[in-house]
Image 1: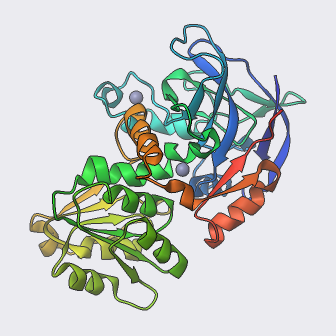
Image 2: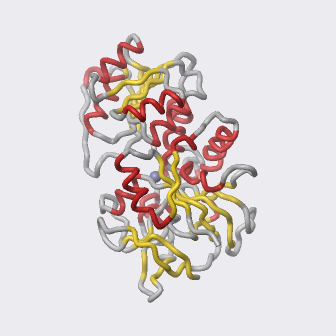
Length: 368
Ligand SMILES: [Zn+2]
Ligand SMILES: [Zn+2]
């Protein structure tokens, strides 16, 4: 079928909005009519070749929309059902069977293979030459996405469908790190490095826990202001302050948890140094490929944990479902981060994301 997509032809190339051919859903597959898709830094990283997704192809991995058609064997989903396209998982490996599909052992193939997990690409140009599909199992910078039924999370009635897509990636990553990995105890202190989508999601999530000290560290004053409005009890402007020292002063000692959401190597060290004995540093931000960091051996040995987390851990229906319920209750107001851009303006959305002007640009697809 003919659909409209933003195609990236080559590394660093522009997003070109054009008609392409998409397969009809096969067994276990679902065709989603995309309402909107969040723009994430990972899309930019893939476009620039720092994540080896084959090009030409279609990116986009924070889509939401309505079910347009289901393939053979798909149950529990019918046409018109609003859905978030969640994290892809094989459903058969040790980690998937263990209830940790974020850590699917076939994750690499699922997110950047450029084709179905055990099959060909689903996209072609109108002339018939292949295009890479299934970026994060969805390639949703398009009016339609072909995905697998096991990735979909139904959206409760009454919620704005076009807003929910970003819950699949950046927002779930930050919030899940707090809910599933940190799990702060009453009175805990938590410092979040980087107040972008992931960090602000962590702040909003922390406000839903018994943590009583929630510190946001960033270099943009506007983001620190937003962090305060969303639940940070303290903010530190790292452009003119020693962040580790500031955290120590606020907490009266090391923090219990540091959440590193920037992926910037010197900041990783600051995050590790912000927690002390029995403290936990969570590495969440994606550093450049090949990046390494070092820590102080002695102080790290003393009961300090450094933990990497991916996508917020958890299963999509539970984590994304909870975030939608919290949003509906006014307890996870992530709409404050969002600004909408129509598909033709996807390049402006990327620029707004890179410059920091917009925390979470969301691309709306032409309807009709
Ligand atoms: Zn993402
Ligand atoms: Zn798996």
